[in-house]
Length: 441
Image (cartoon, rainbow, N blue to C red; front, side, top):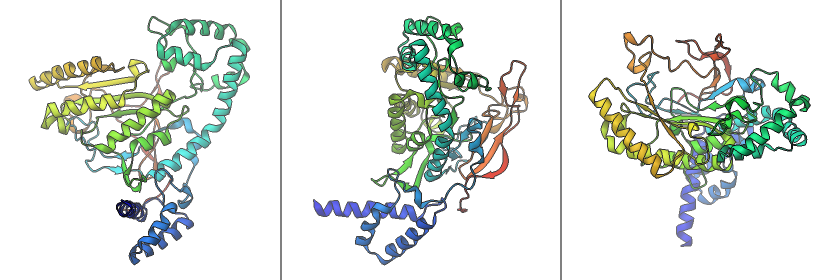
C-alpha cells in the first residue's frame, strides 16, 4: 500500500511540475529561479528531489502568487464599476447554428494565475466601498432597528410582513440616515439601492430591489461559454486542472456578483460538472455572490443535432447542478431557442418544454422557462432580412478583459428614459491597455 501511494504521489507531483513548466503567465524572479531548477531536476530524472520541491510548486489550493509577476497595469481598477466582463475563455465548444458572433471552435483560456491577480486588484478596489457599506449597515440598524440580514431572509422566503415592517421603519428614518448613504446615493447609479415600496406585491421583493452593496454584476463570457474553462498550467493537488468553479469563487464577491449564461455541458464533462458543484456550494453559502444564471437551450447546438434525447439529458443535468434553491425564480432562467417557422423547430420546442417543465416540477427547481426568438442580425445565422432583429452582441457596456490580457471597451449611451444602452452594430474596441502579456503559442 505504501509503495502504491508513493508511485501515485510521484505521478501527481510530476504532473504538477510539468504544468508549472508550461505556465504562460509571466514569472517573478523567484519564479524564474524555481522553474530553472525544476527544469534541471526533471531532466536529471531525480524523483526524490522532485518530491522535495512539491510544497513550493503552485497549485489551485496553494497558488504561490509570489512566483508570478505583477500586472502590467492597474488603471481599469481605478474605476471598478466600469469593469463589465472578465472573459475567461474565448471561442466556444458548442458550435450553435445561430451563434450571433460566429465564435471560433478553438477555446483559449485565461491563465488561472491571471484570474487570481485580477481578483486581488478587484478586492483592493472594493475596500473603500466595503468600509462605507459596513458603516451604512451599522447606521441603518442604529436608526431603524432593522438589519440587512432580515431583509434578505424575508426576500428568500417570500415573507412579506418583515419586509413591510422594515420598509416602514426605513423610510420613516430615511432623513436621519448617514452622510455615507447620501453621498453614495448621489452617484449614478448609486452604490446602494434602497427598497422601493412600489415593487412590494404578493410575491414579495426581488433580491436586487433590496439594499445591496453592488452597482453592477460581472460576466465571464462574450463569444464564449465559461464552462469550457480549464487551465492545465496549474493543477489541483490531485492533479486535475483548474476549472470554472475555481474562477467563479476567486472573482465573485458581494460587490462584484457574477452573472452566468451557459449552453450547458455534456454528461461526460467531469471538469464542468465539478465547476457547477463548486458554484452551487459557494452561492448557497453566500447568495450575494451571484446574479442571474441563465441556461441556453437551442436546436442548433452540436449535441442537440446529434441526439435530442442525449442533449436533453445533459441540459436537465446542468439545470440540476447550476440552479440553487432559495433564490427568486427570475434569477434562474432557461432560455429556449427554437425556429418556430420549421416543423423540426416546433417539435424541438414542444419536447423541450415538456421535459424541462417536468424537471423543474420534479426537482423543485427555482427556475423559469423563457421562449426566445432567434435573432438573424449577425453571426452564423445572419440573413439580409434580419437587419431589424435585436443585435444580441450589442451588450455589456464597459471594460472587457480578454484571456490574453488585452483590455477592450464597449461604449454606450443613455436613451430618453435614462437607460444605459449599446448602439446596434458596435462591439468592444481596443483601449491599448493590457494587464499582462502572454507568449504566443
